[in-house]
Image (cartoon, rainbow, N blue to C red; front, side, top):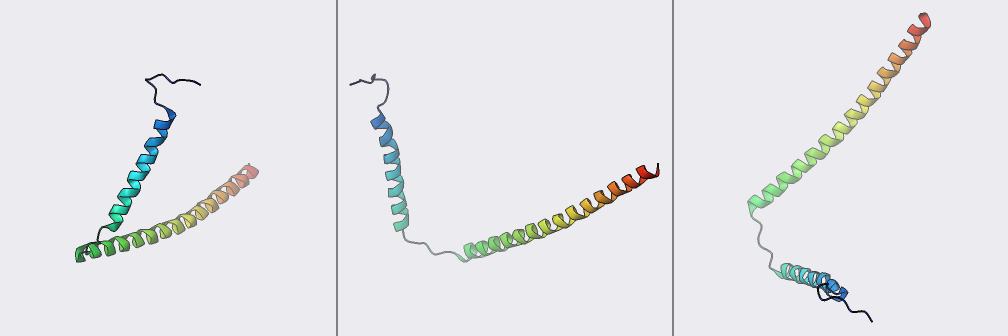
Amino acid sequence: MTHQPKNQPSNFSLTIKPIRFASAALLAAVFLCSLPAFAVSKDMVQLQTQIQQLQDAVARLQQSNDERMGVMKDLIQQSADSVNRMSVTLDALH
């Protein structure tokens, strides 16, 4: 049987803290869920609608940008291939 020095916490006290925290979090969640729902103002609904529209616009912009970048990548690759072919042709002419 080993005894721990008095200045070091025991393993038992270290495991109690997460349990207390989890219990407190669960109690807070139950309390918050039991509160009555407040009426949403017209301004809040309008703001949420505008935010959703903005998110949709950003998603469309991102998709459009991705498509255009893909096309640009293909065109740059084609240009690089053409330059390489011209370089080989010029080397052959020399």
